Image (cartoon, rainbow, N blue to C red):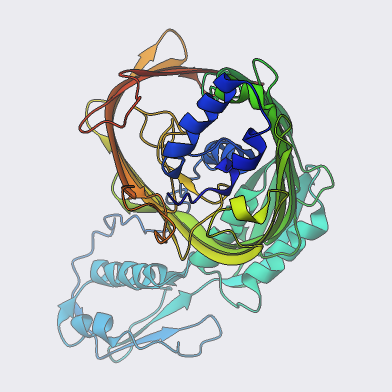
Length: 573
C-alpha cells in the first residue's frame, strides 16, 4: 500500500523498538493516515491559523455626510406672475458656469411663473450639484430686477480653502497633513467622496478619535476644514480560556494577549498573543507590528510566530515533539474607502521553518517554506440592514524537505524540493431581521495545484469549520465549508446581551489533489455535516462567555463522538 504522508513512515525505526504495544499502536495509526492527519508542527500551526483568521470584521461606516437639501416652503405671499425669456447661471465672478443645466431651467421659460417658482429652481440646481459629488454647493437667487425677461442665479460650488489641524493626540501631525494633502491632491472643489475618504482613513487609525467638520472659508466661495484628534484607548488586552485544543497536546488552553496603538505616532499597531495548553505540551507566541508609511493609508508590517509542541496520548511513547517559527513581512493598502464599501489589498512574504522529531525512534523531519501571498479583502453594505464580508488570497510557495529516514522507507511521492500554489476564499453575510433576529451565512474554501504539506492544508472540522467534529478529523488539499446560522439577541441585566443561535454546517473536499500515490482502496473524498445550538453572554469591551453544542448528522466518519461541546471565556481589559 502506498502512503502519502511522509511523517507516518516509521518502518525502519520501529524495528528497533521491542515494546510490542508501541508497535501495534503505531501500525494502527499508519493505516488511516491517508485520511487522518498526523499531528505535527504544520498541522498545529493550521489549527491556530484558523482562530487567528477570525479577526474582528470591520463594517462599512454608512452615510457620513448627508448633503441632501432640505426644501422649505417659500414664505413669499406674492401672487405676481411673470414670464422669463432667459435664465443665466453664473459664478460669483459673474462668469457663466461650465455645466449645461438647460434641462432644469427650460421648464421655467416662456410660461407664467412666480418668485416661489424661482426659489424652487434654486433648490433644484443645488440638489443637482450635491447629487453630483459637490458637498457644499448652493444656488442663490440674488435680489434683482427682472429686465426684459432675464434673470440670473449665482452657483457656488464650494472651493477648497484652508485646513486646520487640532491635534491633541499622539499621532504625528505631519502624517495627518500628508493624509489630507494626498486625499485632495490637486482638487479645486470640495467633493463629497474626497471628504468621506479622508474621514474614513483617519477612522482606520487605532488609538485616536478623529472628527472632521467644515465651515465657511475666509475667502469668497471657499470652505475650510477642521480636523480634530483626541487620544482614544491606546493599550489593552485579553485573557481567554477554552477547550479547543488537540487531545494529543492538551484539550484545554489558556490564551492571553495585549496590544499597543500609536506608539511612535505613525498609526502603528503592536500585537502580542500567547497560548499554552493545560499540560504544557503546546506553546505558541505571535507578534505583529505595522505602521503607516504614506498618506494613502498604506501599512508596512512584520510578523513573527513561534510554536513548540510535545505529543501525548497515542504518541507519548514515541516522544514526539517539534517546533515551527515563521517570520514574515507584508504591505496592506486601503484601495477603496467609501461609506458603503471597503476594499484592502495585501502583499506578503513568509519564511517558515518546521521541525518534527520522534526521539524514541530517532526520526527527524524538517521543512522550510517560502511563500508570497497576494490578496484582497473587505466588506460591503450590499442590502439594507445587511453586511457582506469577503476575501481572496493566492499563495505561491516553495518548500524544501529533509528527513533522516532511509530512502527505501520514504513515501513514493517524497520530493526534496517542490513548489505549490494555493487559492483561498471567504464570503459571509450578516443580515438583521425583525424581532431581534439575524441570519448569518458563510462560505470559505481552498484550491491547490498539487498535494500539500500539513502546514498548508485546510481543516474541515473544528469550531471554525463543521462544529460537530474535532478540527483534526479532516485535513484536505481542496475543500469548502458552508455555515448557516439563525441568531436571536436578548438584552439581559444592565449591559449584557444573550445571543442564542441554531446552526447547520457542511464541509466537503478531497484529501489530496494528486491521488497517484494512494492505494486504490482509499476514498479520497470527505463530507461532513453537523447541527447545533449556541449560547453567548457578553458585554462589549468587557467579557464574553460562549457555549456551543453540536452533533454530526448524515453519514458520520468513523470514531466520531456523538456530541461535541465547545466552551470559551474571554475577558478583555
